[in-house]
Image 1 (cartoon, helix red, strand yellow):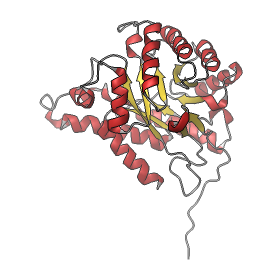
Image 2 (cartoon, helix red, strand yellow):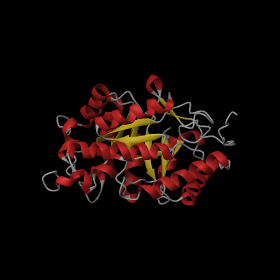
Image 3 (tube, rainbow, N blue to C red):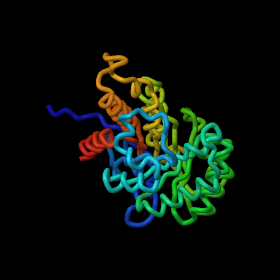
Image 4 (tube, rainbow, N blue to C red):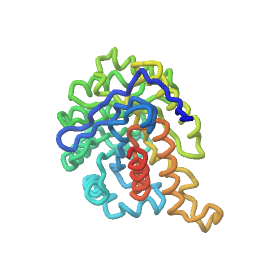
Length: 314
């Protein structure tokens, strides 16, 4: 007697969205089933990985994370080129950490020039990520949007406190935006509705659910992302049918488990392998939860995730 595998009937789908422009543009989304459930639906566009580049040398990275980029840390343009040419990056995420008022507090104009230089040097889609300070991000990302008109950037994070000003600039200068909410499906839906009311096109919006790494609440992250996907695919909730982006690298490498030297705590094992595995495992959990874009750091962790994506989609 043949055994039939139970299958879910999906009535919704994730919108396919194209990021960047030209030959190196990337399309994400388009799923008609849960992540990697190829026996139930289609996943026409596999998840993508964006490699991190910082606008200033990071001061708090462990040596293992610094090593692959130690010769380019002072030059974001050279850093981006190294990611593309040496590590095959298909997207770049430029982190504007130095614009934070609690950091170097670099001006919006200076940040915009850095973004422009990286955008002109990189031939792949460019994500521009603010410092997380709502007021400063408003000033910085609006200036970036104007200075980089026509570069088809992906700008974020946009939150309820600044979405109107940044969203209007992004629409005016033809950029995609990242709607960010703190791990709540209702807040995520509400912000997407507000974006729509503002006039943001459904083809220019991706969602950031806010994530954390293994050991720091990733179970809750998984649950929220899973609920978003369930609502989008089985409940036809059009306000949640957008690709998901996860800024996981900084969350992984800032943890003590990624930083503590083996000599200080031998039970934790090899420091380099530990950080790489933490990033790779955290990323894989997010992929299974529904991530369409991962922002990652270490080339070895990225290699592992690329292999997993290839295995699961082929």
